[in-house]
Image (cartoon, rainbow over all chains, first blue to last red):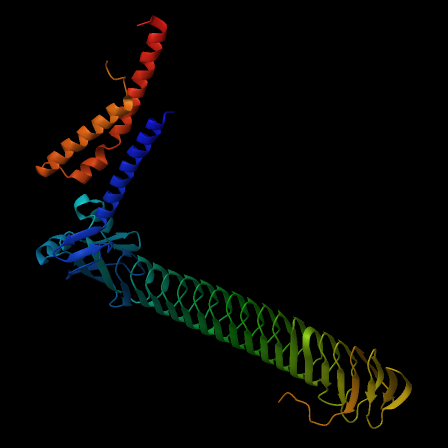
Length: 466
Length: 67
């Protein structure tokens, strides 16, 4: 192809591109009595408000479905047998005459189909007209419905409030959702807005994106799926939370709790049933769990207090802290230590990089630490087996009065120091000590690699469950 | 001696002609210049393509018929 043709082709397409760009920019820039309007959209400048009202008789038990956009929806309980619909129209036009002329075209559409009253506006029809396509207008609904009405709302770009209904099914975006005093189930979906669900009598299903979620007093089972927002739940039935990129706070769950969280801390308190918590890149703080607890976190600390039953905890790159655990404990930590107080039914702990300290334990204990030491203080007379191994750290056992066990301590390379009244050593060589106290009993095996082993009398009272 | 036949010059000629007419009508208040340009600029491609086709067919006729 000749260079002149290529040049002309570039020239023609360049010219077309300039024309198209200029056209596109002109569509979004306006100069007029309201000043310079740059990419401001339709909802800009002076606006005028007009009200319309309508009353619709409905049969007993009728459901309500509201569809709206660019305006709020409020639904409340009113008189039986009728639905009162109030529509506030906000029209963005330069003059009152133009706004009124347009507002007169905005109508309430309310039609009873079977046992469902469908309420909306003729927005779609208006927006399909070329002369009104560029007119911005908001439609705000306020409905009073018969008591115990099932309410469905589909809304965009407006706040939704539903109160005192039989059930609520709300889908909304770009503004807040508030649902209160619902006798039955509630199903909520929200994007780009906060959600409050309060006093829900049945089950709750909630999906939220880019907004804060707050639940209170949900009698049924609650399921929350949230992304990019904090989740707060108080006084719910069984609760399942799936959350990412936000904090999760839970208090008062009557039933089981399940939390799957990513990139955010989890706090759970006062759960009557079992709890399963999975998280990453955030700490997990759990208190007052009535049944078994399983918590797995990546890159976050675990802090558990007052667990009535067993605890299984696993984390990495952070520490685990346990206090007052009534059941068996299993802990696995990579690159972190463990501090535990008042463990009633023994523990099996694996840790690396930091020390493991158990202050007050009963039952069988098995501790394995790499690059850290182990400090063990039984809650009472030691009569259960203990197996403790540490590499590049010391093993220290404090022996309370009345203990009965057979000791097998090894430190290679390292020293074994045993100084407990009544503990009779039967064999001592370099780095090895064997003996028994109280006539023998359970096996106590202490092993240190590149560290010392110290067996001493308990000097302080160990932590105990109140 | 007559200048050789050049499609590019014809396209540029029509483009300038069209642009001038539209500008004139816009100044007279008859058309919106940007709307008209946006509507009609692809006609340049149509015109150019048609001229290329005519030129190709003419060359084929010369090779076959000798005129």
